[in-house]
Length: 154
Image 1 (cartoon, rainbow, N blue to C red):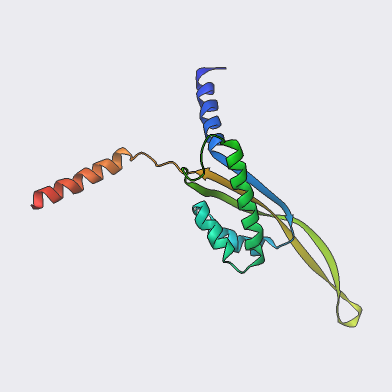
Image 2: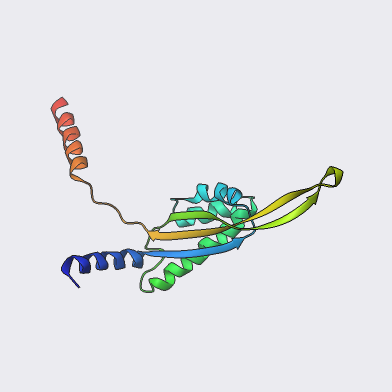
């Protein structure tokens, strides 16, 4: 394996070590209803997300809470040496896709029938440990300019 490929593989391995994934397949809630709750939790710290889901009255919230707990357990299993209290876990990604449909018939007037589509969804949660990013060169230049303006005003 070449040097660049080895560096890329090591970087990918580090990222995979920080993240944990949980899947929920064929959940009998329509994807639209599940996305309403998923959008509330996306990008939020894990403990805050659990609190939000516990106090939400929608049925989808209960299922997402259970899935989030599963993702947290997966992260703990991957990182046995690390403590959950020391890390700040964040819901990095949450995707809700369409699952299979159950097609049912509802009687309609004049001998006709209307089709009822009972939709289901597939949900995936990715939990990641948050890492503070180092300030870029541009941000440090802006900060130094602000400091120089403050000093010159005095």
